[in-house]
Length: 358
Image (cartoon, rainbow, N blue to C red; front, side):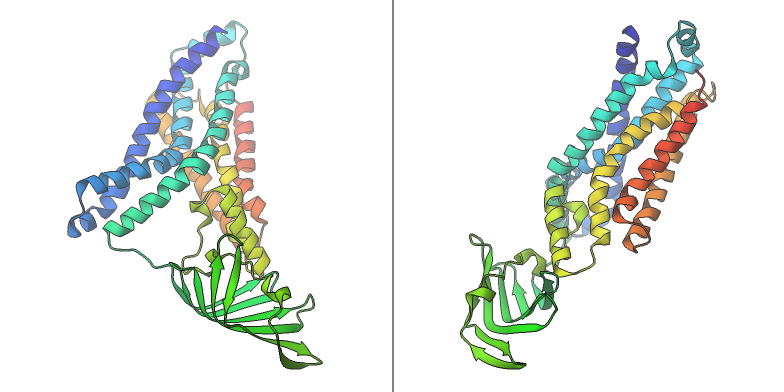
């Protein structure tokens, strides 16, 4: 098992150096894109540095696949260039056996990348965006006007003149209740509706109810039957639409369920939700790609490794963008939109591995 320790000891330091270098480049790109605006707004240096610090986990998340692909490609290519791989093969050790520790490490890093995003990246990125908007005077209000929300598969329709986010209050509310056949059951008008955080329900102010009886609307006492159905979360009434990519998996699932319940389009957010699980797997694919791409040349190992890594990652991202667009438009399912690039590139990696020098 000496070779296991050998390849891991060569790979890990190179991977972390590459990871930090690429992450730093991404962070500096974000800084330079906004630096003139920071200077114009006289933003304090400590706050600008805090923005960079908060953005660091996201840049690491972005950089991990290309850093790992580059590291494995370079390390193996260097071993080929120095004839160490030939000596290894001559001793009876197969290529797959030699790189199996790399594949195990890639699997562990893929799992770690998912939890990095879910537990750290989404929260720090949210803080980064909020602080950056404040420094650049780009803050947006979550208040909303002229809102219409469909709930419970369009059986309940919320219409409000205005939503106030600070107080979680709807003003001038009209509520329409329909049965399973979308036939009108009742209408309730209220001056306001205030979100009760403990009961997770809207409480109505000065409600007036009209029920459909024999195709005539008759004023009746406000029924608990209808009031108890007003459970659509206040978040759906906000002006700012939830970006599934910027929340953790649990919150993203809740938001998508809201869209389904309201009868609204959800293909795009659902594909982004699946992408949260599919994207980290690119680290595992990177290991297979690197193994298949190595040993093609003994000259300019560093340059060739870097070129192959960048090309492979760019092709993956472009293909993923295409499948996500197809998922958004309904050409393919959201699940396929997120996972198809992984499957295709895993197949390509398998083909390359089959024809690798062993």
